[in-house]
Image (cartoon, rainbow, N blue to C red):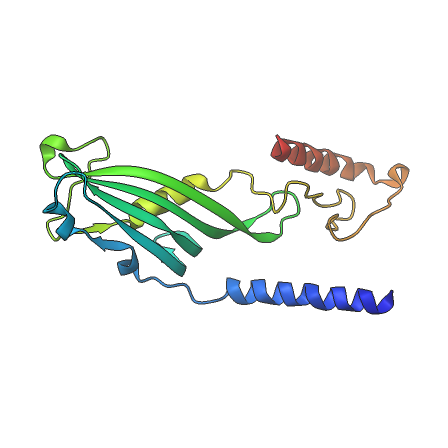
Length: 203
């Protein structure tokens, strides 16, 4: 049993080390990766479409979003009024669990459809026009959609046990057997607040 405990400990340290290494890995700020040259589609017949696959290990979208493992497909279709851009993307973002306060990778998924109009007469509520240089910048749309996709109360896992309201230990890692009668009454308010917060996150 002792050797099994050591092996599990080694595995866990390896996982933690990998997460830390990935967390501090340099994030690309080359936004050219999200600019599509769609000029050739403008001259195609209505209904013509082209898929653009994406596989970006990491990218920074100013002013506040670091994305990891951004992947997906963008389909650009020639329409009568402009270019119809359909975005399907997945990514991960570092978040903090509202229960145990640990950092973890929050998976995100977005789907968005926008029309880049040929003229002001065809512009939709988004106000997007096909740029004169024929290059569409997807960064603003992806950033906005990814920010909306981040949960208000992120959870590292649905059954996260959170922190012990008495000693603050992570209940996912250890079991606390405190005597309820010996709880400092001054900590009673803190305990109730933590319980309420965890119940709210569950809802």
